Length: 285
Image (cartoon, rainbow, N blue to C red; front, side, top):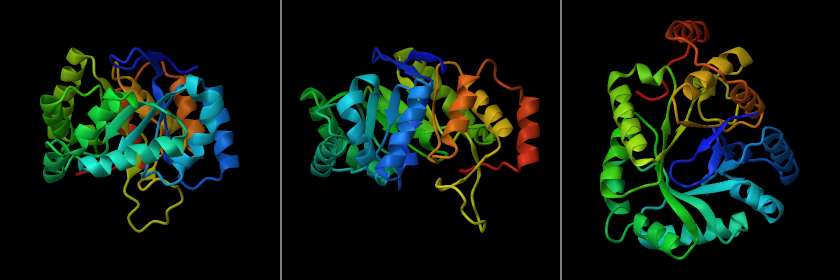
């Protein structure tokens, strides 16, 4: 079984591995329903989705009539203005076939100009706050990609008391001294405020470059179980953080299997060896 821990101050005990539903991007409903069986096998009780994840919200929707009570349900808003955000929130609730989600997140809020719009007086954050006040969501979070995201999340937390953050975490990326320092500062603040910290890109190997894309994730992932074990266990070795699974249906069982067997994090020497053997490079520079 995968360990559970408090998801920040929400009161929910979430599995440390959260289902990243981008894996449902192009699946039929019948194939998506089989994924529900995998989640139940590992007792995963937290789903993270987004309207930009292809058909994901539509595939999750039919699950909710019978299984809503089994999952902490999170989706995202990638629009930046108040009106657009409200329209997206309503659409997500309809697609998910629910009256309320547990968490709405401002999606990939990293660009400074977009940040000013979303956090402004007529921005998306205003819509999320109103949605919370109306009972359409219980909590509000913020997500992001790239090397500047921990610094931007710190800025966001200065402006608003978010309940969760989401950002990349893997061994190769943390070799960037500035990113590592900013991540450490963000993690410290989140622990102080009891803000949930979700992480992504745990099994990223690097960019595809000119290689043929053999997986549905936009980056090249690690694929063999031994390497996935090390990558997943290294992330889970960071006390209190959550790991959002990769967006490939075939890799999902391997990531969940690794998470279910986590005991201790691999050493830096083991990680350096894995990075060297597998040719891992930073996904963001």
